[in-house]
Image (cartoon, rainbow over all chains, first blue to last red; front, side, top):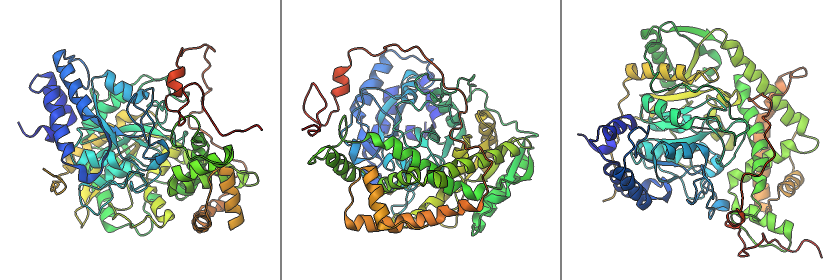
Length: 486
Length: 95
């Protein structure tokens, strides 16, 4: 057998089910590899010893009916884990140990998975490069100068470097799909309401969704199947009959109508991305799908809309960090002084910037001009998608306007950083599911991704399309393991 | 519409985030460039458009008003930044 860490999630599951591998075999390999990979700065909290112990416990009484039997998994540090430090990569939560478990992670453990540790991300998931983390930027396994993308940068980097067989992230404006695209991995943002938000550190509540990040489409289907559930603890959780995504995965997409939105051909788009998109269309045609040109006229307004809506919700959500009941505190001369000093010292620059934007657009005199206006444009963006989905079954776009950039390249210019999410943000505003799959390499040898956007709760369809394309694309990407220490 | 330093300081007060002069000036520059870019929304006429506040446009579910967690005082106080085991402690508010 090849190296254990080279096996996909689904392969590991079947090897454990066939008793060819034990949970301890798998867990100890991942622990070993993770320990040698500190250079990537992916882990914030390691739970290796506990994981090895749990693996042994699993092996002593293996329940092989579980979907993730004894599978070790490191996860984004935005999910609250009971008795395990959860920081959201912020100084303000540096000492926070939740006394409860998020629903999505509970679903993983209920189905046999074992926590390997908590992964670095942008502070409060606000960023596209993992440079805003209090714990320092994550390094991409592709190159030491390269960002892994963000905000789920630690997840993407750990997945690509094979420090975890699969992982989970959260996506508010592209935070799963953009880092997946940058690292040559698969990332899926489910429909709003599919995965419970209970126990996930809140950023923008009307946009946040958790989703799987995996090495292939089959693994994404399997992980989504475990993550997604109806949950009374999340008032926006939707009660619908959840398919068995991995069981129903099919390459039959004959006759499917795929829309190509002309507004995604943005100014200055590189020839490489154009070609990638063109190739994607051809692969779909080869699979028997029909390509249809469509228009999403309000696309260019999605980002400015997002940068009103998301900070507005964030400024409200982050009001809870006041140094009183949990988290970091700086003493002050009086209560207000304590709040102001705590928040000033506890939040990083990008988080402060977004709280300030949000506070401004919600403040007296500006609410109508900004916040209400953005909510109206959000309606227009949603209507664009509604109209198109009368005619097509799914939409194909590039995942990002470029491949991964260098650390420090965009960190001084917030707007150029925000433009990174130009193709992913509209999907969050409309609450739709989107998946990014690796589709090719650029001239520098860095991965590029294609995104498939589906109708609400039509994850099975975009998974099937991605599954068919994956076969045709046959993406191969061999990393030199330059970061490993003995 | 530009955001001046006075406004930045006002928003910082509303946000309960103290700022030194240098940070305030940096934010003035950042916020102006961000809002200049956001202003493009004004190209759109939206008078008769219904605002969209949430994708989950369903009625919120109702539930019985009943206690589900019992005796979790210790858990609740566990992460308190102050050492006191019985209360959350803040600086004196009432003289």
